[in-house]
Image (tube, rainbow, N blue to C red):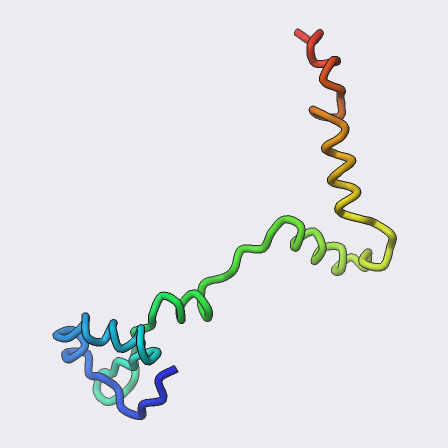
Length: 103
C-alpha cells in the first residue's frame, strides 16, 4: 500500500488519470482527496482482487464447512469415497441398461 502522506486532489486525478492508474499499478493505491480529506482510492486490479473481491469457494469446501458447523467433522465420512460411489451408480442410481427400456 502506498504510504505517501499526501493525497491527490480530485481535479488533478481527473486530469492525469492514466498517470495515477500507472502509479497504482507500480506503487500501490493512490489516495484521492476532496477539501483535504481522502474520499477514494485508485487501486490496481491485483490489489483489488486480493483485498475486496470475494473468492468463490468450491462445492467440496462448502460441504466441509457445513460438516464442521454441524459437528460432523470427526466421523469417518470420506467425501472422495462418497463421490466415487455416486459416479459408479450411473444415471440417477440406475444402471445404463435400465434406461434403454424406458419410454
